Length: 99
Image 1: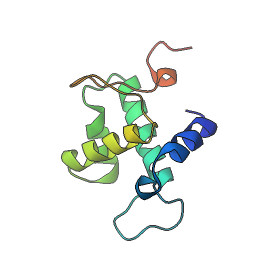
Image 2: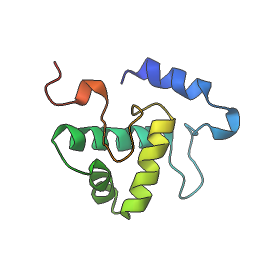
Image 3: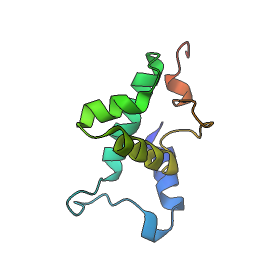
Image 4: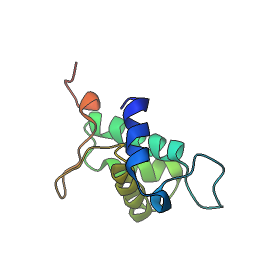
């Protein structure tokens, strides 16, 4: 996903829901952290992994439920495309067989 698209997605969120670009409070993730979550998820989905959210859990050393919440938040920030229930979907540019 291009930086411009991500910036526009960030601007569309209400101020109270925006993720800070500055140093957050302890335990809070920045927008760039969610970009990394999306990148890990996309790479796992592109490699054919059955549950890419588990790749996020492994990468960060967190519980799978926490990883799924982070993936959902990345979707809310338009860093990942919407998905159908129980079907992993990566960004179009990261899908297997994409040019």
